[in-house]
Amino acid sequence: MRVRDLVDLATSESPPLRYSVDEIVESGQRVQRRRRLGWLTSGVTTAAVLGVAAVLAAPSLLGGASPPVTVGPVGEDAAAAQVLSVPGPPFTFSFAGYRVGELRVADPIIVSTAYQLAPVYADGLTLYAYLTVYRPGAYESTGLVGAQSVTVAGRPGLEINSSGGAWAAQRTLAWEYAENAWAVIDSMSKEPNLPSAEDLRELAAGWRPAPPTPAKVPFTMAYLPAGYSLDEVAMHAMTGLNGIASAGDGDYAGLLFSSPAQPTTGLTAPYGGVDGDSPPGSFFIYVGPAENSNQRPSTGVTCLVGFCNRWYADDSVNVQVSSDGRLSDSEMTKILDGISIGNVHDDSSWTEVGTAVP
Image (tube, rainbow, N blue to C red; front, side, top):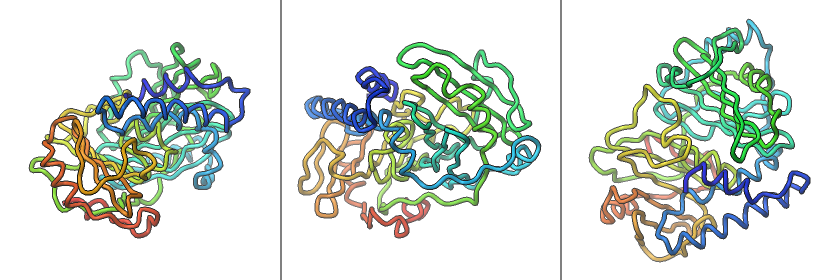
């Protein structure tokens, strides 16, 4: 199931906003359980089903993540700060979470060869939103068709505001935070005027760089099929926009590999697009708690249609290689046989991804 399907499904069955957060979360979990039952018979990988509950539960996450950093002044000072902020090497996070008013950007959880991704939350709103910070030259701003020109922290920006479908308001704000380097906020809200276009511009103006921090994973690999390279890493999430939609589900890590490598220029969305599809020539590794899987632990490697599983840490951790048939079962088994799991609950013991991957 794709990200858009998950979002539409979640909102179509969600209770009205007068309900409590706990009731909203429970509604999402009921949807999630029903989808998992169907997946076991269809042979579809478990990856994307995890996105439903997080979209509904987003307001409950506001108090649960790391404290927001203080936002500095806007205007010329903000513009100067943003010009200095060019992302570090691939697979390093170079900004941190922050708050502006009732909107909060969480710490980035996904980083690729071309961008970083962070969820965006709002006090008291059912909101599906995220920030993508692209590396210089990666984003194709001309792909934002029909956008109006705006100014963000003294720098050029583009803005689209629309409505329809499951959401009362859909907004996209892109701005050039440094020369030929763009960041984009995508927001879908159940309220037609919240967040407003001005709210998103203020949120964008509050963005600041942070010292580069390398992405880490709780495992090491001994085998990678010939011709494949690492394109994207997720910490405490799955990859791509599936990882943003399921950011609160408690997953440990996700990796995207491709042959040939995914492009690093000309992008208009994260890999897999807004629907969270599998990019061409790709396979994934997902690491998550056993309770997030719709399959039961078993000895050794077990394969179904297009993916294989292995269980670790007394069957409490599930590792899945998913390739949509691009890799044979024997290749996926070799990958799993070469994986060594560490302490999934202690980030300080995790391995930098450049060392973890062959």
